[in-house]
Length: 332
Image (cartoon, rainbow, N blue to C red; front, side):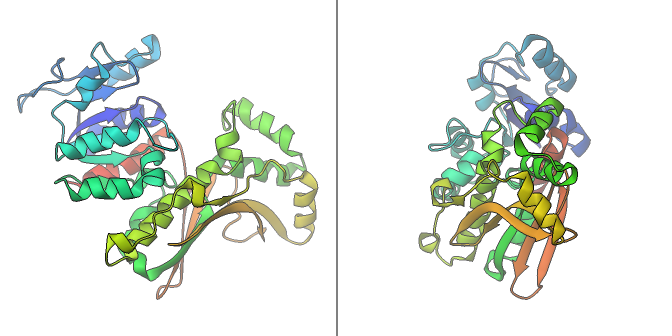
């Protein structure tokens, strides 16, 4: 498959680097201010024309802060089979990611998203655009990195899934794990996480529960639309519908007291086809949900198969890129 990758952060660069190992060819890459297109113009390519040089793209981005000398619009106009949308997540109108995806669908191309915004904030609009296109969308990478949460729900069939819950943010989980293990307070561990690169300079998206809530909103929409006989009957959820509490106010003393009772605290997100909740919760210290460090876990409650648990790395460039490229493979 020929890929156009929009977004050159950790995930986009990893997709560019790993695509060849999965049998795909990158024909265009764009960041916010530049692009590189295989033929240099953004126009049609001959079938035997080579793709872009992954090593050159990654090196140019590191050295010059750009991926090429073309215009970003040239990448959107390139001759590709699948658009990979890996720009940063934005809320509300989910732009520019939403427009990137719909532009691909209008050309009857497929789109694979690592960007949570369009799927969490404008899921109904995306489904409508898919209905008018010969292209499809997939978005495994938007929930849990390398963990196949969305595809597992789809395989079981959403109508047979009653709830999905789990630990879905590695930064928050790292902080809570360290607080419990060392008896430290939040501010101390946050500073440590920032020094290690586990937390951003502005950690709000992670520690306030927004990231986990967006992932749960996506799962809730998959459940709602997947179980509905008519999409018009499905309930579309956005971040505004989620009940969200983060970890800033969790005191170290709460973790110490929990440990005395054989418990610990984790930021747990839960989604059904009707509701989304994210909040710190007490869980058994040696229980399934008490994953440590930056690990994530997803629990899927089913009508007939009981509870399924899937854990693994929920973030990172190569990990998320593996989910993106897995989705691309499903579109072949």
